[in-house]
Structures are given as C-alpha cells and as structure tokens.
Image 1 (cartoon, helix red, strand yellow):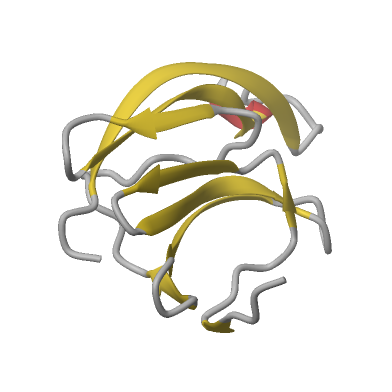
Image 2 (cartoon, one colour; image 1 turned 180 degrees about the horizontal axis):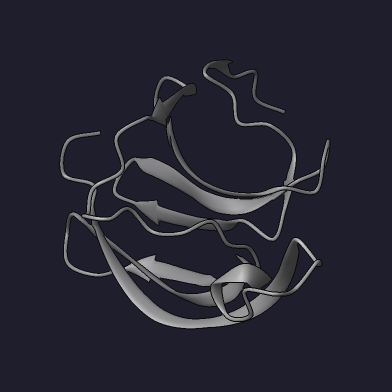
Amino acid sequence: MFVTSGSIPPPVAGASLTVIADRLWVFGGRLVSNRRMTNELYSLDMETFVWRKHANLPGDPPPEARYFHSADQYAPDRLVVFGGMGQRSLSETSPHSSVPDTSVVLADVIGLDVSNP
C-alpha cells in the first residue's frame, strides 16, 4: 500500500481514472458524503505519490459535473471524457416544475488539456 499526500480527492463513486505518463488522473464522480456530482479534476504524481487538485479546469465552459462516464488518453497531453450521468434542474426544461433536480444521460465529448499538471 502506498501512502499519498497533498490535495487528496474525497471519496467518490463513478469517477474515471486515466493514466497518462507518470500521472493518474481522476475526474468527476458522485461524492459519497452528500451524493452531489462533481466535475473536479485531480492528479496523482506516480513517482512522488503527491495529489494535486486542478482548480481551473481547461475548457470554456468547463465540463459539467458527472459520474459513470468514460475517460481515456488522447494524444500525449489530452484527456477525453465521454457521457455519463449528469443532473439538471427541471426548471431548465419545465419552468413550472416543483422538483429541483433530475438525473440526465449526457452524450457529450470533452477534451481536457492536461499538459501543465
């Protein structure tokens, strides 16, 4: 077992893990503590075992929060994310709804530049 330090990610379900060179990338997931979906991006340096949270996600706008998505390496410094489950306020689709949020299936493709970890 390895001991890690730094900005250790919180426990999540349905996050993606992708290894690019000497880094393990963790994206998204659903927080175990409150079941909220996240779009947070973390990396673990596999040589030093130090975690880093990437506060400024590449992209405009940043990818929306999701879990049970797919992710893989594309090119030496790109992470591509596909689909998963997201959450929408029903007021976005039905302004008279009293239900605050609903799960939706996402079918988008997002490329993240991870060249500056």
